[in-house]
Image 1: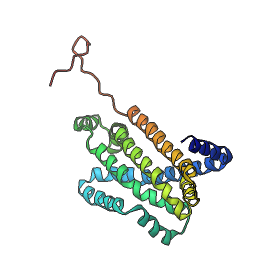
Image 2: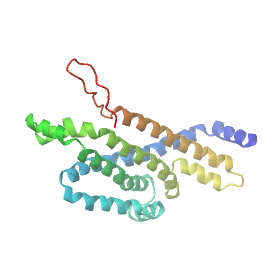
Image 3: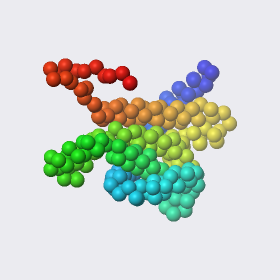
Length: 230
């Protein structure tokens, strides 16, 4: 055990710049894939929330994409695009559509109808209601979709090393190609796991920050009322 830790420390000390470069490359591929998916999925989620008849078909299509095995998806994209990071980013884009789309749709349709009616009564347009009421109230749910998509994307990027994309998966593959490469495999696997954990914690914190705060009802004197027992 101690020998393995020593080998791991030695590998990091000798290859720090290489590991840091692949770590940065790995995160960028995951972030770009989720970002592009968000640019498409959030507006699309708003549209299908507006036109409920489209929701089943669009979400089912996203579900079908999600069921395609990662290696199969990357192989098909490789034939169309070629080797490299672009293939992985496109795959991540496709896999990230479902969680972001579904959470956007869920967040928008679950906005309290009373608030929407109040906005209309104040003379707000549909665009103003969307910007000032629906999206702010649905933001925490949308952030949960982005959180799931990013964590999943970080894991998928590791497979991208087989398709010439680099990233931490490249280090893991190097470890599998040597006789005693356990330390090298861990050198790639540990930062990947830490990246996913840190991303999950950061996105989880943002999710809580954007969660709408419900005000406590008050009586006529301004004193907060205690919640009635169920």
